[in-house]
Length: 317
Length: 315
Image (cartoon, one colour):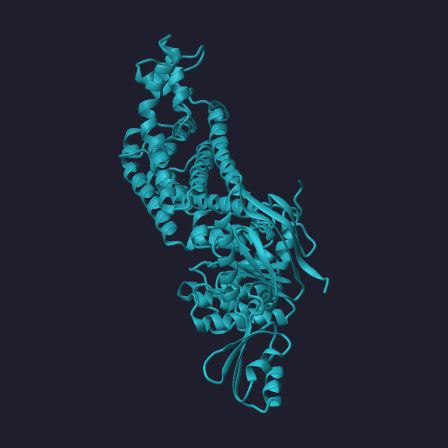
């Protein structure tokens, strides 16, 4: 059965309205300010140690993201800041319309449901993008002031890739929160379900997945066991994001298994390679390409599930 | 009048195998106010949602202005205004901003849009709260804002779900006036309600819903004749000889009851006041008082469901 008219008629109107809502919402403004403030504080605390310890480092600028103290900014983004702001943006996107009883009135206008959901998703993504660009510019600015040297072209390129990946990562969490806001009529339930998933993949999964992998695959050679463990760990978007960030921001790392091996006192040596020599940007991206694709696919999957549920949902309260 | 704006034939809605609307058929003529009446859960809202293409149709057909709501929902929604049960607005936006958002979704160009927002708000008496946030609005003001949205849309059909529920008498009165005004503009109105007496005064025809079926359909006096068998009650107070017999002979009178000294209550199938007055005068009596009570929808409804409850228990 073919529907008449464009599924996206009204999409732009919804997007603009939702963006306006985000930037006038106290919750969102507080979250954006909080997230940016935390990032700025962490980075500015990290500048002095970076200056003292790694004066010879050719990629000094990138250390702003990975070696700030007491926590690395990249870790903080992965585990706390990005999920927090994305869930804050998305948890009442659809059930809020139900609870305000505006949904049936809006859907009785000449638009399809697709336009409403796409509009909400794009508006969330746009708000995340603006927030992360602000955060990113602040960090770069602090780096310029604090370190006193400008970043070179490759550092800028790598930092830009980090920005794009962080937006994708935020997109995953936003799509998840949007999904829960479609499934659960109560905003409180949606928040707690989102936080539950966040705790699970961020804190519990890293603890449980090795055991689960061992139990399911049995004993084998040590490398095989490690690979299985890693495959299981990668079900968590946090792990994917961390792997991408580690490779993209540190040109001396040439495999996602390197840090795991290092923990066991092993070193990855490739034939003909100079240990710790930086690899080109394209090579770094190629190493984590599967992770990038996985992260984007995860976001799309979350959105598609939400889309299907929303299309079939009854409008009446 | 063969110009129907809504035609419904054997419309059925099933949820998980349970039918909530069981093959109903009705038509709404152009410029008519049609009431869907019945208790909560009788299938009124489900019917409305199917007409708007907001809920799938399990079986049967619906045509709204000649369009199929499931296949051409945009065509239908472009020309039909909908006021949901307990309509909601964005509390953080003003009345005008709320309308501006829906006007954009309707696709009006900016100049036309502002003009329409202004006139429709003025029309429902919300001109002085145009730039007030909806959060401060009462229930009645929200309902009127919903009607302003329908006016702004220049809809040919207005579908109103429980428009008067939860309103105080004054607000109800104002709202019913706006609904009558819609009719004068040539808009067909389909409204649902469980509050019968309030709706009786505005509806041209009604359909009584009962457990997913339409039990009765027609004008209120028609239903009165069908269910109560008459329905008009005329009270006569007069002095004179043999008046009871004279009154009973008036055509259309079905029953004459004595209701006190010199007072009679007539049950009849139409308003017989002129004939009754003539009969009293012809008999040389003195007519003191003459009043008529039209069949109330409430009475029709109660009677109908009492009878049918009885039948159901008997079988």
